[in-house]
Length: 439
Image (cartoon, rainbow, N blue to C red):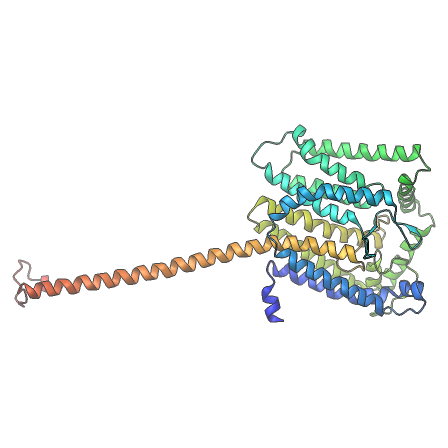
């Protein structure tokens, strides 16, 4: 185990907090999956879901390990070449309209011959954040004009969001807000950012108007869901979303300070998404306010390590990559917690590294691997600097030793020359009688 830990490069703080979140996830997932177990095979045995979650976490850490060994600057080219491929996959997913368990799941796609389903929007978000970081780092030394950035930067951004929006408004809003944050940190002109935000709001309004003009089109079917969730959040109408929020609030209120205990949640049997979207409510019910704050603190500590890693990065691209991939994870976690306590309407965002699910865990781990690749480069640079200083110190010692040897040899030769010349008298013939003492 010690040998394996020594092979892990990069920020040890990030490794530690990610491992703690992953280890903590097993008990809530094991407990909260009982509802799925009853609906799936009627036995209530959640062992299979625990094993599945364990496999997802293990694969996720393998992804982190292998990705963090790749030099992060390789992803500059990968993002540029991979973004058009992502557009094709997003378009295919949007048109295909996958159905999972009888429900419309147009944001999901199934991999042929494997049967594994995942959300291409998670891959698109990572590619897009790296692409934006690449553009900002490339144009840092040259003045940015709105016309050039509109074509080179914002056109790919809006194309990506256009493919995600019809099926997933919350993910679209999250990605867009994170891109705005990233370009602001990357010192993109503020007045241009305001123009783009105005264009984004106008594009969303136009999409909603099209949905109203074609109410029977399946392409706009999710618009009614968005409106109902916002209306329910504002007016407290009693539908399914309100039912989930009420059960989540009951779970949180039942937890009090120390919780009911691991596995003793009651509301997990009533919450439809207790192991994914509303797992934070189950955590608070079983582990109380202490457990809920503990999870929140872990995410905040992880955010702190992201800030430190970004500050230490030796290139602008590395700094922006850490911010662009790290901050959305924490922001998504905050959204999940806010939904559970009814500070935000239902969004369908999972709790990173804790909620059950394969693709969400793996894509989170993929992003973490890239961040650790950036921090690994910093360690390598620091190690090279330390080794260089040691080499210079050793070289200086060798030079000093050689100089001392040369001086001793020169003194020895001088004495021999005096002896050979017969200058071996102890009489002082100099004018200064103190020379014998001074010399």
